[in-house]
Each structure stands twice: as C-alpha cells, then as structure tokens.
Amino acid sequence: MNVAGRGIGRALLGSGLLAVTVLGGAGGYGIGLMTSAASENAGGAVPLGWVTPATDPSSTPSVPVAPRKTPKPDHTEPMQADELSYRTREFDTEKNVRSHITVKVPRNWWMTQPDPKLLGRFTDPTGKRWLRVESGFTRTRPPADSMALRMEQLRDLPPSQTLTFLSHDVDPVTKAATLAYTYIPPIPPDSETLRYVIVRWVVLDSSGFVGVEMSSTGLPQDKAALLDVLDHATKSVTRSDSPL
Image (cartoon, rainbow, N blue to C red; front, side, top):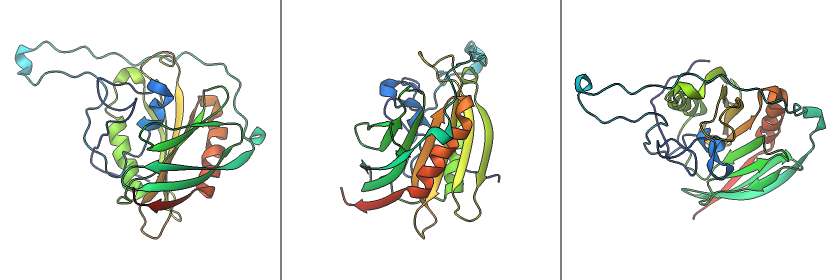
C-alpha cells in the first residue's frame, strides 16, 4: 500500500540524522534510533550525508558523492525462529509522558536504555540482532503517515549506505504499518555489512494513532526470525501512561 507524506527528521542520541553524528554507531543505539518513529513530535534535523554551504553553485566546486558500497557478506549462522523462546519484560520510556511498556522478547536478549529513556533495546548474545521499542511520545499520527515520513527521511541517506526498500504495507485490520529495508551503516565495525531492518508502527487504542514503534534488526539471513521477533512483540505490547 503506497503512502505519501512530508519529510521529517530527528536529532537522536548517538545515531541519528545530523551530519556530525553517526547512524548505527554510538553506544550501540544507532540503527535502532535511526529506524525510530520520526517520533510523533520530531523536530527538524539535517539528514546524514554531505553538507555544503548555501552559495552560488556556479562558483562552488561540486562535492563528490560516495558511490553505493558493495557489502561484504557476514557468514554468521542465521538466527532460527523455532529456537527462540520468549518472556515478558517491563520498562519505562520518557518523552512527552512516561510510558510503562510490557512486551514479549527473546528470553536471553539483554536490555539497555539510552539517557533520556526514549526507548528500550533488547540485543541478542552475538550483538548482531536487536529489537527496539519506542514510546513516551504523544499519539498524534496514523501509522501510514509515520511510515511515509520515515521513507522520505531514509531517502536522504547518501548512496554509500546502499539503502534498498524491500516492502511497505499497512494492515487493513490493525492499521499497523510495516517497512522493511536493507542498508550499510556508515562507520566501523559495521560499515561493510548489510543490515536487514523491519520497522512497525502499532496502534494500541481507539485513536488510530501510533502508540508504539518497534524495529527488529539483524542480518539478511535472519529475515524470518527477525519477523518472528517483531510479531511476538506486536501481539504482546502494552502501554500505560503517566505524567512526567
């Protein structure tokens, strides 16, 4: 299902979209935050990539654009969905409100949170797969709109990050929007490895607006298991809010 929207950015902890920060790096939060919801109250941020002065182009040499990279394969054994077992975890996120989140995640994945606590992240023992769950924002946007905004944002990534959209759709019943894509992070140690990302915007009440955004990230060979992780989280997630 195709959707359209306006571009939006977000300057986020250790990742995000400023030219002076990095995607997929600092403190291990990068890709998760990059795939976060262009959160419901996001502010403007310059997309990652070349930044040039606003001068007369006829008098300024063009800035070279790095070509698309060819990823190097990661031969890690694929994660298997039937080998995963799940348990319920609880944590709080804080932005506009404090959201208490419960969600089922793989049993042996360890949890971390940034400061401020915009999200919870659960990482597998290899450090190569993770689930990010974000909330704490005001519910103001339908999932389809959040997905469209994120797609436009991602299109601003430089060619060297080899972004490829794989699918995007909206569930006609639940209204959840799901986006899948691959890309190469810009800095070591992941700057040669293709990452497979599935982002989902989930409605949790009658408003029809995004209540929780989640992304499941890993390697291309993990596709089926990453979707299983995301589906378990989608079916189990709850959110209850209180003032900050």
